[in-house]
Image 1 (cartoon, rainbow, N blue to C red):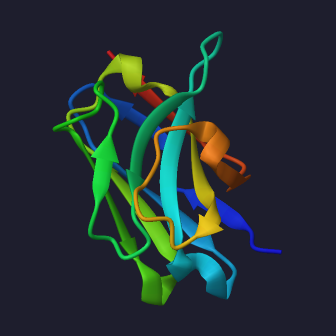
Image 2 (image 1 turned 120 degrees about the horizontal axis):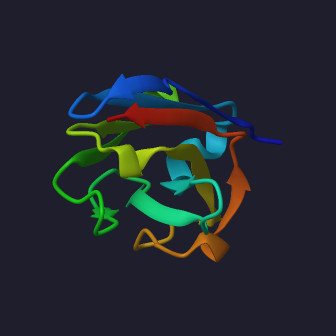
Length: 127
């Protein structure tokens, strides 16, 4: 069974940057669209970004567009989330997720399309 392990979270001041990583343990990584979601206390899970299995298509949530960048390295079976110009509202637990189907053409915003999730990494942005 493929496992996904996030890292790179932490405490940062508003306006700062963090880079999250999600390392996958299985060979199927390169066949799967990947996504990042986040969940703040008392709030619903929110779509952040997704990337196609080849890395040629990316989509972003409106609240992070222009500040966050998703990328992947299939040789390293890792997906990244570069977060710049962080705001206190970005404070949340960030999760990476893998598409339930191989070679899906478009990356999806819907959490129901992703069936494997990491344990999450906490990002805290202070004002």
